[in-house]
Length: 350
Image (tube, rainbow, N blue to C red; front, side, top):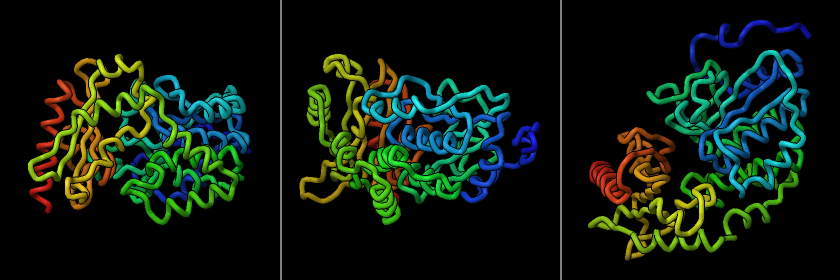
């Protein structure tokens, strides 16, 4: 194989969205060349989709002979280590002299945290706010963003198949973890036929669909149950019950001896609350005070009320039906402000 001495950035100076087939072809062009290695990045405060996508892609590239590292901001949350630690044991970082950097499931460079300045070569994502047409997108010369995909794991599955990577049970388990956690065990508004088809395909590849689903959605620690009680005790309804919200504080985390990564899919605690007449509300808000005065806002919505549009007003983004942002201040006051923005959206689009 001819050694590639250039940087792929230099042969594609213009950002553009390109087909997944072209991404696969470009990656294959560098796989197996000992000069080149890959670093795969995922967003801070990682969820199952970020980790499942990153490690499944890493195993796929590694199976083709590539040197691969998976890089995040913090330790992998305990609930996901049953899969990531096994993957790490068989990945080979190698000593490649040049590196291609891939970001998965990460809508903005800011979401890479301390890795935000590394310079990403490939973006693989499913957040609508990461399209080039959006102001806050992550810059990279090679980009493939599918807003219609319910999870990034579905994109990685298609990519690996295009690269003719065998979908082993281990890869299938990682991708199913990514899929099932991003569609809230097939209960989220983003669930669609493609996500169900991907789940069936992964089950056919040997994924432990029952055990993975139960691990993430049926087993709760006393700390998780205590935090859910805090949310229920602080529920707030708008006057017309179309917006429902709650919040938790940094003191709550300390009191229940729990960390935020242990609250997998915690937004569902609020999202499952309906109006008094049992009808669905158009927006749900959860504010989590990660540390004193620093909050993470999560919004889910029913179209035409748009969660990404709402969070865009406070510096965030995400999907049309589920988005987030970070804000400084008192969590109760932030909840009131975001619920007010949601009410404006309800009045404008309903």
